[in-house]
Figure 1 (cartoon, rainbow, N blue to C red):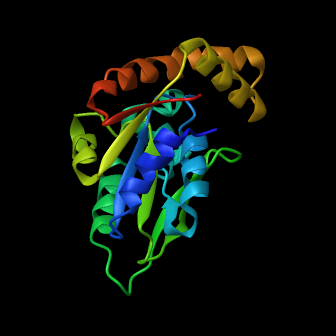
Figure 2 (figure 1 turned 90 degrees about the vertical axis):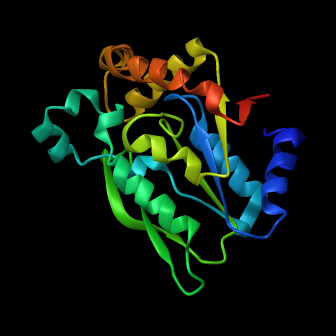
Length: 205
């Protein structure tokens, strides 16, 4: 459950009636998507979610680049494309619908144009790993967001969630453990180093 403190903070973002962009950052398995959904339920029709994961490079492109075994690392996303979308969302015109891609774990691919952002949407919630990273195109993300919240969670619980997630999507327990320790954990360490740049640290009650 999201506490009153965080709901009040969200209400403050919505109070002005103008477009705001809220970033939800954190390592894999920290509960970013769950938090974003909870905030959306509180905000209702005033908000929508546009995840960073829609900018995963396609599996065929990752294979061509030799990065398939590192899917989820900072260089396995179209970071420049994500920045361009945020820029469009900041200056969306009153007669314009902006379409964003969505990532599907069941097929491990993104689908273009699945998320429609209406011009009257007051709050766009965008969640992802690298919103606070200060290198490459990622360094252009935070200045485009009104606030970034970092989701903090105990590392043991986070790793358990990740293993369970990978098993649900087709890996054996052994394969899931290997992926978490070989791929997810190096990414998590990098993401944790960006924690101090967030305006708010979110902890699950």
